[in-house]
Image: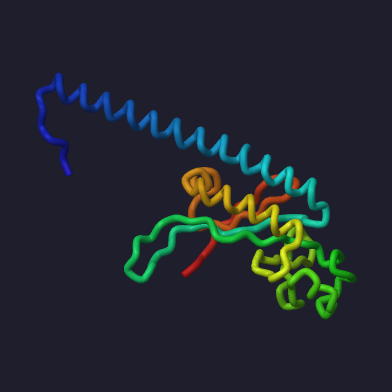
Amino acid sequence: MSKPKMSSGRSSAVDAAFAEMRAAKKSYKDLLKVQGKKAVGTMFESFFQAHPDVIGVTWDQYTPYFNDGDACTFSVNEPAVVFKAEAGGEEDEDDDDWEGYGARPDDLKEYFGHKCAAVSLDSSEKKAWEKDLGLIYERIQEFDDVMLATFGDHVSVIASRKGFEVNEQDHD
């Protein structure tokens, strides 16, 4: 598609105005990414200090490809807490102690080089970490644009004491 023809003086003024807007948009996105990572990092730093048995928090965030006729909009999905297998007892996939965390042995995955359980916020009796993570999740949902700028679209994010790990993710 070609640009509309204008007199040379007007065309250069329009090009300059759009170049300025593009630069402002890029600066805004860069600022969102830096400040977003800092703010989310601060929230999780406090969370990890309050809950030393938690080694990580993971969540997916993406724009769905299909939404049954509704608009496909970006969102951050509910987070899950990651515990080391030793937290529930011995590092044994058949260990019944995991039920106290709301996990089953088949829920165990490899995180941070350890067998771990990712436990979601949907248990009936809320533990202290669930309440605190629920508050973080509420705040994060207010800032989808910041989360998108900070971590990207179609990703799985793991927050730990060392920072963030972001991995591309396939979803339906």
